[in-house]
Amino acid sequence: MDGRRAAVAENAAWCALVAGGGRWGPRAWTSAVRPPEYYPDAVTLDPAATAADILPFVDGSAGCSVKDSFATLDLPGFSVLFEATWIACGPGVPEPGWRRVVGHADPSVAVLSRGPAEVIAHRGDDVVGLSNFSGPDESWPGAVAAVASAFPGLPVVGYEHGNALRLALDHGARALGPLRVWVR
Image 1 (cartoon, helix red, strand yellow):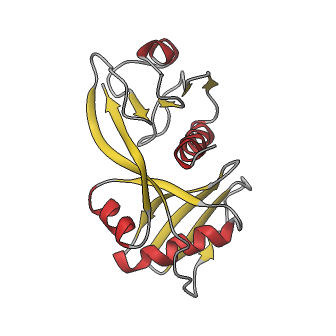
Image 2 (cartoon, one colour):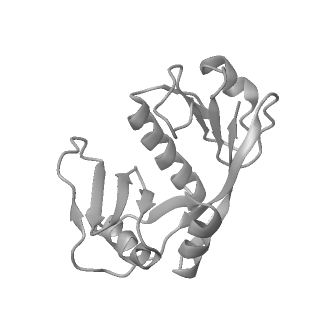
Image 3 (spheres, helix red, strand yellow):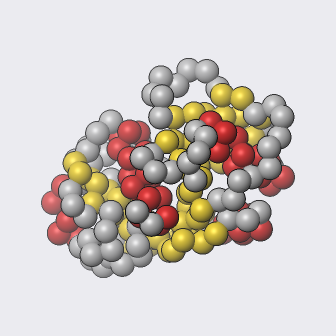
């Protein structure tokens, strides 16, 4: 599986975990029940996905969002919320003091923190996803290293946009391809 498809598969699995389930189709993961805030109702798994692979399986009312993992969808009645880039992170720079936050029961998830910085790691089949990074810019390399050490031996992937994308690329991340998030 190439890096982008591995990142997409991990991210869809993370969204399904947060949503508490969902439907896995050949070209999209969908949730008939609205996921928690900031999480999509659907994630495309294939660049050939169409609205027909998604819309019959989600609550398409106002607030419905779709992660178009390959930036190829045409979704009438939706608008682009933001565009981002899938990334493969470098190894990061180990920093002492990163620790697992106690309290998450799922073994595929590690919430990591160091001072004001925090990041979530989710182990997929072939990669570990880095998401929800918050903290000062200088904490990014340590966050990447903490995610890599939480699940050793797996490449670290994620997606970013805007200044967060610039920060990741400045610290050795490699762009894997575009994505869009649509909202109704």
